[in-house]
Image (cartoon, rainbow, N blue to C red; front, side):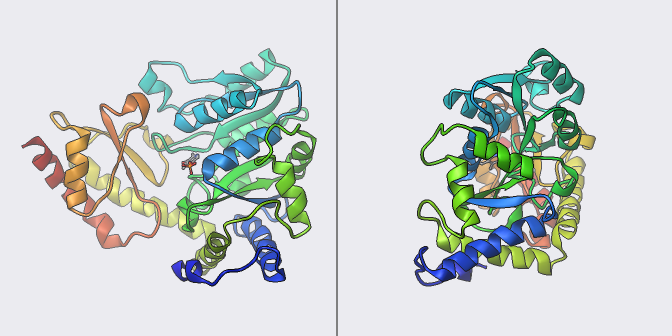
Length: 353
Ligand SMILES: *Cc1c(COP(=O)(O)O)cnc(C)c1O
Protein backbone atom coordinates (compact mmCIF):
# COMPACT_ATOMS: atom_id res chain seq x y z
CA UNK A 1 0.00 0.00 0.00
CA UNK A 2 2.86 2.41 0.77
CA UNK A 3 3.93 2.04 -2.88
CA UNK A 4 0.89 4.13 -3.67
CA UNK A 5 2.68 7.05 -2.02
CA UNK A 6 5.57 6.76 -4.48
CA UNK A 7 3.43 7.14 -7.56
CA UNK A 8 4.42 9.98 -9.82
CA UNK A 9 2.77 13.35 -9.75
CA UNK A 10 -0.79 13.56 -10.94
CA UNK A 11 -2.44 16.88 -11.67
CA UNK A 12 -5.80 17.02 -9.96
CA UNK A 13 -7.29 18.69 -13.03
CA UNK A 14 -6.62 15.59 -15.18
CA UNK A 15 -9.21 12.89 -15.93
CA UNK A 16 -7.15 10.25 -14.03
CA UNK A 17 -7.78 12.22 -10.87
CA UNK A 18 -11.52 12.42 -11.51
CA UNK A 19 -11.45 8.61 -11.86
CA UNK A 20 -9.66 8.20 -8.54
CA UNK A 21 -12.05 10.60 -6.80
CA UNK A 22 -15.07 8.86 -8.29
CA UNK A 23 -13.71 5.45 -7.29
CA UNK A 24 -13.16 6.49 -3.68
CA UNK A 25 -16.55 8.19 -3.47
CA UNK A 26 -18.09 4.94 -4.60
CA UNK A 27 -15.91 2.50 -2.66
CA UNK A 28 -15.96 4.14 0.78
CA UNK A 29 -19.72 3.79 1.36
CA UNK A 30 -19.70 0.36 -0.33
CA UNK A 31 -16.89 -1.09 1.78
CA UNK A 32 -18.43 0.39 4.94
CA UNK A 33 -21.85 -1.11 4.15
CA UNK A 34 -23.78 2.14 3.59
CA UNK A 35 -23.79 2.38 -0.22
CA UNK A 36 -27.59 2.44 -0.36
CA UNK A 37 -27.92 5.38 2.03
CA UNK A 38 -24.76 7.50 2.12
CA UNK A 39 -22.48 9.43 -0.21
CA UNK A 40 -18.83 10.23 0.53
CA UNK A 41 -17.12 13.62 0.54
CA UNK A 42 -13.30 13.66 0.71
CA UNK A 43 -11.52 16.45 2.55
CA UNK A 44 -7.75 16.84 2.77
CA UNK A 45 -6.63 17.46 6.33
CA UNK A 46 -6.37 15.68 9.67
CA UNK A 47 -9.43 14.24 11.40
CA UNK A 48 -10.14 17.49 13.17
CA UNK A 49 -10.60 19.27 9.81
CA UNK A 50 -13.33 16.76 8.96
CA UNK A 51 -14.93 17.22 12.40
CA UNK A 52 -14.99 20.97 11.78
CA UNK A 53 -16.51 20.61 8.31
CA UNK A 54 -19.15 18.25 9.74
CA UNK A 55 -20.14 20.61 12.57
CA UNK A 56 -20.27 23.58 10.20
CA UNK A 57 -22.57 21.67 7.87
CA UNK A 58 -24.87 20.18 10.51
CA UNK A 59 -26.52 23.29 11.96
CA UNK A 60 -28.69 25.88 10.21
CA UNK A 61 -28.52 29.58 11.08
CA UNK A 62 -30.16 30.44 14.40
CA UNK A 63 -30.28 26.83 15.60
CA UNK A 64 -28.15 25.00 18.14
CA UNK A 65 -26.23 21.75 18.53
CA UNK A 66 -26.35 19.17 21.31
CA UNK A 67 -22.98 17.54 22.00
CA UNK A 68 -22.16 14.47 24.07
CA UNK A 69 -19.08 15.41 26.05
CA UNK A 70 -17.45 12.40 27.71
CA UNK A 71 -13.90 12.65 26.45
CA UNK A 72 -11.38 14.77 24.59
CA UNK A 73 -13.07 14.33 21.19
CA UNK A 74 -16.61 15.07 22.36
CA UNK A 75 -15.20 18.14 24.07
CA UNK A 76 -13.52 19.04 20.77
CA UNK A 77 -16.85 18.84 18.90
CA UNK A 78 -18.31 21.32 21.39
CA UNK A 79 -15.32 23.66 21.07
CA UNK A 80 -15.48 23.51 17.28
CA UNK A 81 -19.16 24.48 17.43
CA UNK A 82 -18.49 27.48 19.64
CA UNK A 83 -15.45 28.56 17.60
CA UNK A 84 -17.79 28.71 14.59
CA UNK A 85 -20.40 30.81 16.40
CA UNK A 86 -22.84 27.92 16.95
CA UNK A 87 -24.80 27.71 20.23
CA UNK A 88 -23.78 24.43 21.89
CA UNK A 89 -25.58 22.51 24.65
CA UNK A 90 -23.63 19.69 26.25
CA UNK A 91 -24.67 16.45 27.93
CA UNK A 92 -22.22 14.66 30.20
CA UNK A 93 -22.43 11.57 32.39
CA UNK A 94 -22.69 12.28 36.13
CA UNK A 95 -19.88 11.71 38.58
CA UNK A 96 -16.33 12.75 39.30
CA UNK A 97 -14.08 13.86 36.40
CA UNK A 98 -12.68 10.37 35.81
CA UNK A 99 -16.11 8.69 35.85
CA UNK A 100 -17.43 11.36 33.47
CA UNK A 101 -14.77 10.42 30.94
CA UNK A 102 -15.12 6.67 31.29
CA UNK A 103 -18.91 6.19 31.18
CA UNK A 104 -20.95 6.16 27.97
CA UNK A 105 -23.79 8.65 27.76
CA UNK A 106 -27.21 7.41 28.88
CA UNK A 107 -29.57 7.90 25.88
CA UNK A 108 -32.20 9.16 28.35
CA UNK A 109 -29.96 12.18 29.04
CA UNK A 110 -30.15 13.04 25.33
CA UNK A 111 -33.92 12.62 25.38
CA UNK A 112 -34.13 15.05 28.34
CA UNK A 113 -31.77 17.58 26.77
CA UNK A 114 -33.74 17.57 23.51
CA UNK A 115 -36.93 18.24 25.44
CA UNK A 116 -35.23 21.15 27.23
CA UNK A 117 -33.76 22.66 24.03
CA UNK A 118 -36.26 22.52 21.17
CA UNK A 119 -33.97 24.59 18.91
CA UNK A 120 -31.43 21.76 18.60
CA UNK A 121 -30.75 21.13 14.91
CA UNK A 122 -28.05 18.45 15.29
CA UNK A 123 -26.95 15.94 17.92
CA UNK A 124 -23.23 15.13 17.85
CA UNK A 125 -21.54 12.17 19.54
CA UNK A 126 -18.20 10.40 19.20
CA UNK A 127 -18.67 6.67 18.64
CA UNK A 128 -15.32 5.55 20.06
CA UNK A 129 -13.82 7.97 22.58
CA UNK A 130 -10.18 7.32 21.89
CA UNK A 131 -9.46 9.21 25.12
CA UNK A 132 -10.27 6.10 27.15
CA UNK A 133 -11.19 3.35 24.65
CA UNK A 134 -14.92 3.65 25.34
CA UNK A 135 -17.86 3.13 22.98
CA UNK A 136 -20.91 5.42 23.14
CA UNK A 137 -24.40 4.02 22.26
CA UNK A 138 -24.59 5.75 18.88
CA UNK A 139 -27.25 3.42 17.43
CA UNK A 140 -29.70 4.39 20.20
CA UNK A 141 -28.75 8.07 19.97
CA UNK A 142 -29.37 8.03 16.21
CA UNK A 143 -32.89 6.73 16.78
CA UNK A 144 -33.66 9.37 19.42
CA UNK A 145 -32.26 12.18 17.27
CA UNK A 146 -34.46 11.39 14.30
CA UNK A 147 -37.61 12.70 15.86
CA UNK A 148 -38.36 15.77 13.68
CA UNK A 149 -35.81 17.07 11.17
CA UNK A 150 -32.73 16.94 13.40
CA UNK A 151 -29.56 15.38 12.05
CA UNK A 152 -27.25 12.99 13.87
CA UNK A 153 -23.53 13.63 13.48
CA UNK A 154 -21.07 11.00 14.64
CA UNK A 155 -17.30 11.12 14.82
CA UNK A 156 -16.38 7.57 13.80
CA UNK A 157 -12.75 8.45 13.14
CA UNK A 158 -11.29 5.81 15.46
CA UNK A 159 -14.12 3.30 14.93
CA UNK A 160 -14.48 3.11 11.14
CA UNK A 161 -14.09 -0.55 10.11
CA UNK A 162 -12.92 -1.73 13.55
CA UNK A 163 -15.72 -1.30 16.10
CA UNK A 164 -19.28 -2.42 16.72
CA UNK A 165 -21.90 -1.49 15.74
CA UNK A 166 -20.92 -1.07 12.08
CA UNK A 167 -22.06 2.15 10.39
CA UNK A 168 -24.82 0.25 8.59
CA UNK A 169 -26.57 -0.12 11.95
CA UNK A 170 -26.14 3.52 13.05
CA UNK A 171 -28.66 5.98 11.68
CA UNK A 172 -26.11 8.77 11.28
CA UNK A 173 -26.61 11.62 8.81
CA UNK A 174 -23.08 12.96 8.87
CA UNK A 175 -20.24 10.56 9.72
CA UNK A 176 -16.63 11.70 10.17
CA UNK A 177 -13.87 9.29 9.14
CA UNK A 178 -10.19 9.39 8.20
CA UNK A 179 -8.07 7.26 5.93
CA UNK A 180 -5.65 6.27 8.68
CA UNK A 181 -6.67 4.56 11.97
CA UNK A 182 -8.94 1.53 11.34
CA UNK A 183 -8.86 1.82 7.54
CA UNK A 184 -5.03 1.44 7.58
CA UNK A 185 -4.42 4.20 5.00
CA UNK A 186 -2.13 7.18 5.48
CA UNK A 187 -2.81 10.30 7.56
CA UNK A 188 -3.78 13.57 5.89
CA UNK A 189 -7.12 12.68 4.34
CA UNK A 190 -10.56 12.57 5.89
CA UNK A 191 -14.07 12.04 4.64
CA UNK A 192 -17.70 12.57 5.50
CA UNK A 193 -20.42 10.05 4.79
CA UNK A 194 -23.73 11.84 4.31
CA UNK A 195 -27.26 10.47 4.26
CA UNK A 196 -29.75 12.28 2.00
CA UNK A 197 -30.86 14.28 5.05
CA UNK A 198 -27.23 15.01 5.96
CA UNK A 199 -26.41 16.21 2.44
CA UNK A 200 -29.50 18.41 2.38
CA UNK A 201 -28.51 19.95 5.72
CA UNK A 202 -24.99 20.62 4.44
CA UNK A 203 -26.49 22.48 1.51
CA UNK A 204 -28.68 24.57 3.82
CA UNK A 205 -26.06 25.45 6.46
CA UNK A 206 -24.56 28.95 6.25
CA UNK A 207 -20.97 29.54 5.09
CA UNK A 208 -19.15 29.76 8.42
CA UNK A 209 -15.71 28.96 6.99
CA UNK A 210 -14.19 29.54 3.59
CA UNK A 211 -11.93 26.49 3.46
CA UNK A 212 -13.99 24.02 5.48
CA UNK A 213 -17.43 24.80 4.08
CA UNK A 214 -18.59 21.23 3.40
CA UNK A 215 -20.99 22.20 0.63
CA UNK A 216 -18.02 23.44 -1.46
CA UNK A 217 -16.59 19.91 -1.34
CA UNK A 218 -19.85 18.04 -1.79
CA UNK A 219 -21.11 20.12 -4.71
CA UNK A 220 -17.73 20.00 -6.51
CA UNK A 221 -17.26 16.27 -5.95
CA UNK A 222 -20.66 15.46 -7.36
CA UNK A 223 -19.19 16.84 -10.60
CA UNK A 224 -15.90 14.91 -10.27
CA UNK A 225 -14.04 18.02 -9.15
CA UNK A 226 -12.41 19.36 -5.98
CA UNK A 227 -12.41 22.97 -4.75
CA UNK A 228 -8.76 22.97 -3.55
CA UNK A 229 -5.60 20.92 -4.11
CA UNK A 230 -6.13 17.47 -2.54
CA UNK A 231 -3.55 15.04 -1.09
CA UNK A 232 -3.51 12.92 -4.26
CA UNK A 233 -0.93 10.34 -3.11
CA UNK A 234 -2.78 9.78 0.16
CA UNK A 235 -5.93 9.18 -1.89
CA UNK A 236 -4.13 6.46 -3.90
CA UNK A 237 -2.99 4.92 -0.63
CA UNK A 238 -6.59 4.88 0.63
CA UNK A 239 -7.71 3.16 -2.58
CA UNK A 240 -5.08 0.46 -1.89
CA UNK A 241 -6.07 0.22 1.78
CA UNK A 242 -9.70 -0.35 0.79
CA UNK A 243 -8.62 -3.17 -1.55
CA UNK A 244 -6.63 -4.77 1.28
CA UNK A 245 -9.61 -4.46 3.62
CA UNK A 246 -11.86 -6.14 1.05
CA UNK A 247 -9.29 -8.86 0.29
CA UNK A 248 -9.11 -9.69 3.99
CA UNK A 249 -12.85 -10.22 4.36
CA UNK A 250 -14.17 -6.67 4.77
CA UNK A 251 -15.37 -4.81 7.84
CA UNK A 252 -16.80 -7.86 9.67
CA UNK A 253 -13.47 -9.65 9.48
CA UNK A 254 -11.57 -6.57 10.60
CA UNK A 255 -13.86 -6.05 13.59
CA UNK A 256 -13.26 -9.71 14.56
CA UNK A 257 -9.52 -9.32 14.10
CA UNK A 258 -9.46 -6.25 16.36
CA UNK A 259 -11.61 -8.00 18.96
CA UNK A 260 -9.26 -11.01 18.99
CA UNK A 261 -6.29 -8.69 19.39
CA UNK A 262 -7.99 -6.92 22.30
CA UNK A 263 -8.81 -10.25 23.99
CA UNK A 264 -5.22 -11.39 23.62
CA UNK A 265 -3.54 -8.27 25.03
CA UNK A 266 -6.15 -7.75 27.75
CA UNK A 267 -5.78 -11.28 29.10
CA UNK A 268 -2.09 -10.41 29.50
CA UNK A 269 -2.88 -7.16 31.30
CA UNK A 270 -5.14 -9.06 33.67
CA UNK A 271 -2.42 -11.60 34.41
CA UNK A 272 -0.21 -8.67 35.38
CA UNK A 273 -2.93 -7.38 37.71
CA UNK A 274 -3.36 -4.12 35.78
CA UNK A 275 -6.68 -2.33 36.03
CA UNK A 276 -8.53 -1.31 32.84
CA UNK A 277 -10.42 1.96 33.35
CA UNK A 278 -13.46 1.26 31.15
CA UNK A 279 -16.01 -1.44 32.13
CA UNK A 280 -15.99 -4.57 29.88
CA UNK A 281 -19.37 -3.86 28.22
CA UNK A 282 -18.22 -0.47 26.93
CA UNK A 283 -14.67 -1.27 25.87
CA UNK A 284 -13.57 -0.67 22.30
CA UNK A 285 -11.60 -3.25 20.32
CA UNK A 286 -8.58 -1.06 19.78
CA UNK A 287 -7.64 1.17 22.73
CA UNK A 288 -7.06 0.06 26.32
CA UNK A 289 -6.60 2.59 29.10
CA UNK A 290 -4.73 1.16 32.08
CA UNK A 291 -4.07 2.50 35.54
CA UNK A 292 -0.38 3.10 36.17
CA UNK A 293 0.93 0.64 38.77
CA UNK A 294 1.93 2.16 42.14
CA UNK A 295 5.36 3.75 42.10
CA UNK A 296 5.56 4.04 38.31
CA UNK A 297 5.45 7.33 36.41
CA UNK A 298 4.28 7.35 32.82
CA UNK A 299 7.41 9.03 31.45
CA UNK A 300 9.66 6.19 32.66
CA UNK A 301 7.25 3.48 31.62
CA UNK A 302 6.96 4.97 28.14
CA UNK A 303 10.74 4.99 27.71
CA UNK A 304 11.14 1.42 28.98
CA UNK A 305 8.40 0.16 26.67
CA UNK A 306 9.89 2.04 23.74
CA UNK A 307 13.30 0.42 24.40
CA UNK A 308 11.47 -2.91 24.00
CA UNK A 309 9.89 -1.82 20.73
CA UNK A 310 6.41 -0.76 21.92
CA UNK A 311 5.08 2.78 21.68
CA UNK A 312 2.42 3.73 24.24
CA UNK A 313 0.25 6.83 24.67
CA UNK A 314 -0.15 8.88 27.82
CA UNK A 315 -3.53 9.77 29.28
CA UNK A 316 -4.97 13.09 28.14
CA UNK A 317 -5.95 16.01 30.37
CA UNK A 318 -6.88 14.95 33.95
CA UNK A 319 -6.22 11.28 33.11
CA UNK A 320 -2.51 11.90 32.46
CA UNK A 321 -1.29 11.43 36.03
CA UNK A 322 -2.70 7.97 36.81
CA UNK A 323 -3.52 6.35 33.44
CA UNK A 324 -1.89 5.46 30.13
CA UNK A 325 -3.08 3.87 26.86
CA UNK A 326 -2.08 0.97 24.67
CA UNK A 327 -3.51 0.93 21.17
CA UNK A 328 -3.69 -2.13 18.89
CA UNK A 329 -4.70 -0.37 15.69
CA UNK A 330 -3.06 -0.71 12.27
CA UNK A 331 -0.81 -3.43 10.85
CA UNK A 332 0.61 -5.38 13.82
CA UNK A 333 2.05 -8.91 13.74
CA UNK A 334 0.59 -11.45 16.20
CA UNK A 335 3.93 -12.17 17.81
CA UNK A 336 4.27 -8.50 18.66
CA UNK A 337 0.85 -8.56 20.33
CA UNK A 338 1.71 -11.80 22.12
CA UNK A 339 4.94 -10.24 23.41
CA UNK A 340 3.30 -7.09 24.74
CA UNK A 341 2.41 -8.34 28.24
CA UNK A 342 5.94 -9.61 28.83
CA UNK A 343 7.47 -6.32 27.63
CA UNK A 344 5.04 -4.43 29.84
CA UNK A 345 5.91 -6.57 32.86
CA UNK A 346 9.65 -5.98 32.36
CA UNK A 347 9.07 -2.27 31.74
CA UNK A 348 7.08 -1.84 34.95
CA UNK A 349 9.86 -3.50 36.96
CA UNK A 350 12.51 -1.38 35.24
CA UNK A 351 10.50 1.82 35.68
CA UNK A 352 10.21 1.15 39.44
CA UNK A 353 13.90 0.45 39.94
C1 LIG B 1 -7.79 10.66 15.99
C2 LIG B 1 -9.16 11.21 16.26
C3 LIG B 1 -9.59 12.43 15.71
C4 LIG B 1 -8.76 13.28 14.80
O1 LIG B 1 -7.57 13.76 15.28
P1 LIG B 1 -6.53 14.44 14.28
O2 LIG B 1 -5.29 14.52 15.12
O3 LIG B 1 -7.05 15.76 13.90
O4 LIG B 1 -6.40 13.53 13.09
C5 LIG B 1 -10.90 12.80 15.91
N1 LIG B 1 -11.74 12.06 16.65
C6 LIG B 1 -11.36 10.89 17.21
C7 LIG B 1 -12.36 10.12 18.00
C8 LIG B 1 -10.05 10.45 17.05
O5 LIG B 1 -9.66 9.28 17.60
